[in-house]
Length: 373
Ligand SMILES: Cc1cc2nc3c(=O)[nH]c(=O)nc-3n(C[C@H](O)[C@H](O)[C@H](O)COP(=O)(O)OP(=O)(O)OC[C@H]3O[C@@H](n4cnc5c(N)ncnc54)[C@H](O)[C@@H]3O)c2cc1C
Image (cartoon, rainbow, N blue to C red):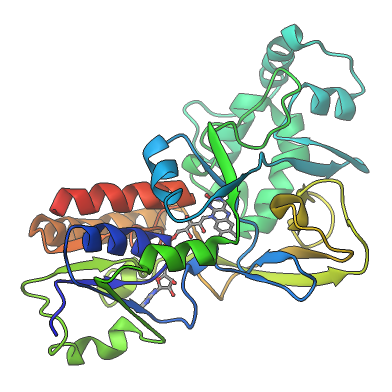
């Protein structure tokens, strides 16, 4: 049988594209090089009876109702509002920075009305370039040097293994600071954790009579032998793997930052007071996650994970340096030309070399598939 579409990768981007194409009556072949589906969102039920996120904590949040509604067809969400604490000066304080954070770290008693004025003074007493030349400038111009040093500088050095001055200002974007006591990590309207997990949700997305899934199949190893299954000249190819690999690295390798994620089962009901505690200045890991807080599962044991950033390994985060962005731009020119034919879609965090949250990955796949249909 010949398929109408080939989807490379069964992460959230690939699952979204495959489902939408299948619902448009296309016969879809999905190739996944790993043994599991769901990509970075993969999760599983551990022996402790707690669902664990294989690639670090994943909290779904979005402002896009259409994305929330689309995924809600394949899972129910546990209504969960994420909270993060940051360990600084020997205390755990709310993060992102809010009024309570400021009062705790500076021993002040600032009111909600005075927070903006306080930050203005912090910025005024700081040194930075306008427009921002790098990550450090972009953060300092919003919150000042003292808060940058406490919460962002060392975390960024650990996370990226680089001086924040070498990183693009885009990595910082808008630093959320709350004048009030709101201690939610995200303020998106829709937030939650799929009941039963992300992997189950992905399985349901692919559960369609028009979809065939083949795991353990690396596209690059089998592409020359796909002729009997798929005609690339006629069909729609959706690529969600790494951008540089598709073009045989012709403009050079695009760098990724990786993580060594260490899991531990702890013989007590709870380990810490929040789902995630950041350690910007202490230890070599960036944060500790305790999954139970997110999933609401009951067990007399708990599972935590610590993330140790590293240079090589599973490609987790695109490194947004000037060099990488220049290479990306060259690859994206090629992508544009292929997408113009209406026979190719490059979508997802790897294929677009972009940091995408899950909802952005789903949205990009939705928009691009609609574009070709
Ligand atoms: C540590 C971490 C924490 C995160 N936390 C959050 C969070 O809390 N909230 C949030 O919204 N987002 C979070 N994200 C982002 C989220 O993981 C991504 O947005 C999402 O997984 C993107 O899905 P994707 O399908 O584009 O990519 P991926 O999940 O990487 O899927 C790509 C798939 O393609 C497969 N593939 C690649 N090459 C080939 C090939 N040649 N042949 C066949 N298959 C191939 C891969 O094996 C993989 O399964 C986090 C990311 C990381 C790294």
